Length: 327
Image (tube, rainbow, N blue to C red; front, side):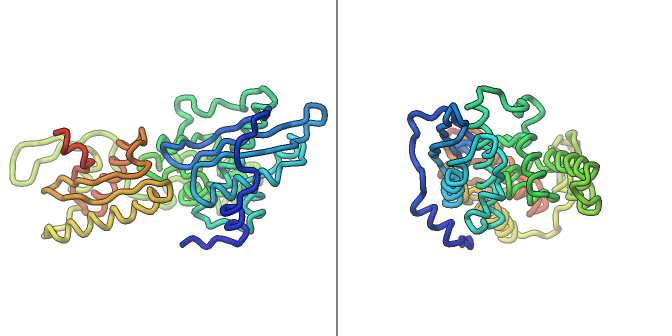
């Protein structure tokens, strides 16, 4: 169980300002219902004074997401739009008496929605087109460079785990970790140059290296044959690290352990995964909940395959159980 404060519980069970604001003149939408939390923030701004007189929200997500959205509306009502822009995700978390580290992304979602709603009210485009090719860091959750940069700068983030906790970037298939690390190193370096971060605290790519697969396919000899076969880089890496004498029961146990490591992140977003069968080197899993309708489910499967291969230490193929029905 997450350690929620009484204020979080209050704003979840009895949210303030929930619902539709029909005469809103500023609307901001962030997140994705198919892949996790989503928030629609609606504000009504007095044209003469630029004061936010009303604010309402519609949120799809966990208790922290609902509480954060509700807290945000309470924080901004009565402020001018420029004053509201100064509200940070940390202000939202502080208003609630704190959030679990793994749920800080809910407060970040609120700050992003506020930024979008005010831009919509002003009738201007946001400072950058964050979703142009090359700027989208995490496809699973639609997290772009701009959102990561704002979270890193606002909260002084210096690790990949922190970026994931605050933005969800890299929390699903994990194939984007390298891009996130490169972005984090670049942002931290800029913060050091500006005097906003101590050099000793800044993240540096390679400072705590994790195993990385070669970029191009590799040709190896399949055990028991002399015929060369082409495999993926990750499969070649797993084959090289394969433990000797692994029994089928041990293999299944390791596969189950890898899946159990992944489940909490999927469950937090309304999805789930379970092991269905292991047939040789083919692992059959079942996705459920929001994972079923998610357009990025194939990437989730790839992430599961990578995690399973890393745990077992040999090449494996992970497929959804629906693939068996269509075969």
